[in-house]
Length: 297
Image (tube, rainbow, N blue to C red; front, side, top):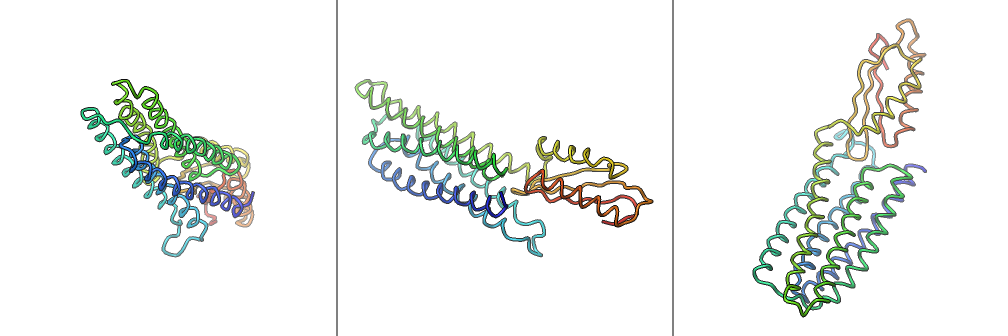
């Protein structure tokens, strides 16, 4: 699959998800105004942050397709991390707001109205959410992408959130005549908030690591070392290997010592072969190989 083709597939998936989020936000907002359900209100707030997340991912994928400018020689991949941290903080704030409202409903319980509409919406959106999650996982399997992996986690969390919310409203409706049923709605909200906090923490913590140039994941490190082993006859010694992630891209620097008696053209041919091999094995990778002998790459 070509880079342009994979970008188009990812953009298409995110575009559909963005339209779905917009429709979900409008319909859930209408349902929240027709009921007193803190559960539905919690989903409206979560849907707003999910929409921002999908929009940010869509804009980032479009932006990284552009070549790096003289002002941003490494591209603008870290913009994805900055936006992810912001969205994570917003999701945390929304979760705290829903938690406060749920606690208030424990002391002032209100039986939600119009819950049938909310249950139907949650059921439909959970099914669509799991479908989008499965589609994103297939895209990641075909073409590894940090953005799409993040989106897959987001949609799994969202669909699971919808299942909990819908189940809470259904139980409140079934046991409507029981006094304790008035507390099902805020309890379901608190359970749903756990999904919000989990998604927000995962999004923010991973992005902070990338912003601080944390060590890349072990699977990528193993691929780099495997490539160096394959080409072990091309160089004398490894001095240093370091790599960092910037958005969807991985930047790798390798410092190798070559035979000082070899011609510069021979060394450059070995460097080009190793670089091409590593970049083909690890999609989205930019490899720089620096000789530590007298030759210059």
